Length: 143
Image (cartoon, rainbow, N blue to C red; front, side, top):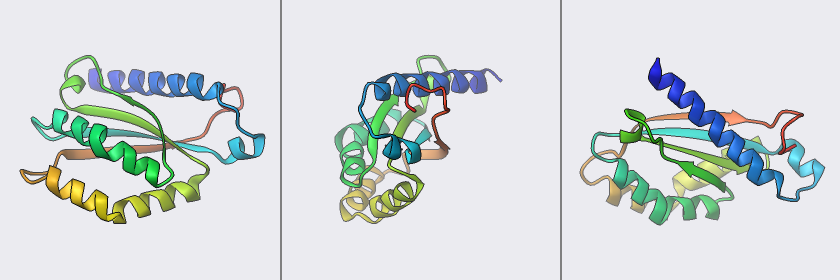
């Protein structure tokens, strides 16, 4: 129950922070209308959270950008137990179809395949991935 509460607080904080930041960006109403966000939560395998952070820091965020995924923010929980194994991040796409294409292109990218293989020599870094697609409400600063 505590873990779920912490995750919900982190989710709200992540979306709020993204809304604040994106509210300052200038986008056309047409583009903003279809824009979609993806909130992802990764559970790292035991002892691999720092390796997961390193992979994102050194490779993954750049590859996301290469494939049209907008890196909005990355968060590390501050309270145990989530602080020991969780990475939360938010991406943005022009629309849901662009998100689907971006993930397909990313997963098939030879650079990603190489990075993944090299970083998982001793085993998988992630045991669970949760993904939620979001759209701003009509009263959001992002609308």
